[in-house]
Length: 563
Image (cartoon, one colour):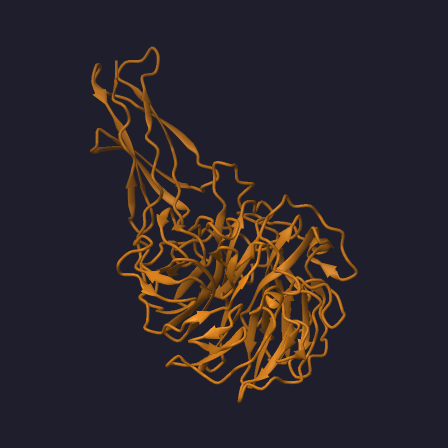
């Protein structure tokens, strides 16, 4: 890639979140225009052991999974294999530090066993062309001395029958062979096939039918033929087709409508085939002509706008996620025939990835305020981290205008390279949820770039609640044979209801309490222990027990004399 070709016509938006402001509605129906019509109903919750009539989530306990040493931008599950694309050079065992002797080379593409998290032998070498630039290059590898290389894989998508895997990104070579930003592999063997094209800038979105592969991104030509950020190729033979709708800015996500007649397109564009609304639209899969579409995401100006980051479908609705600068950055459900809105989730904190598993929409974001949603948390104080993984029903009960936030709160940190975003890719096979991104911890333990969670059909809820703070015991003034114990609840990542036991002197349970506990509002309790021998000294601890009998116990209070 020569220096003259190193940059896209416009770069993908930087990831930063500003305080939410309400945007002016555009001529098209935008999320901001719809949001005021939605009224939150009474709270509801779900977890791995929910009340009757409420959906069960998968567990929040991360399963042992090999890690990457960089960012995972995309994950696709095909049969028993999870294919992972990103910007990384190695994979290593769970719990291992970077540079571990067991590390294996994987350059931007890797494959893992879905059920075990172990790496598979497939290891294509995806590379870019070095170039010189005195300007820092976003999303490229800094080789030092003003040398750069852009080689990340941004999208991995299978054909409907699982016989091919299509990949798109910034790369220029695969296994030493020229592949200009798009490539294809035959499955299950994983051999690079003859699908070869020269795309002049990043391919960031892919979707495929039985006959056609659709691509979107930041490019303006394919094989020297003009294509304004959208193109299509014949699945048989790989030839560039005449399909050529246009987007005036970047395309970030694509998906076929459930009936296969339309391609739904998401991104940061203002016009699709010259038509609004901003960020979302639909074109015919056969011709590329515009199809009816009602709802966009917010655009006020280049500094106050939203853009679509991911699209998924459950066969009935289409779900979109958004990033925003001072505007909408949550999730919404749309009717796939015309783009009319079913519901909007206005949680604040840029959403980068979504997937549907067993009737629930799981999302990766850096949510910090879900007060608009039933059972949602308020603005998190500086002492509480972003909540980067969430779950909600795809089809909320009739009493809800907007989905409740379900009680499922695993978390990652924000990684070092993408402005603290964390999760960037989600995929599942109906049993295991795979999460990729730019993070280095999961639930507080070291784990970089990749993790996974399981349903109760394939794993058990094994992790106890979070640590409990040490209780405080004191002798009430003017009393004899009494001590007052004050303690604060803890919380569990996937069970809201916990049983608490107050224990005297390590072995006597003196009080039992059942309570619903949430991480953003931990209640404090006081219990008076009576009938103690005057002058005796006692200490106390608190034990929390979840519905699966996982237990955690606080340390003992400072011993206090009962007077």
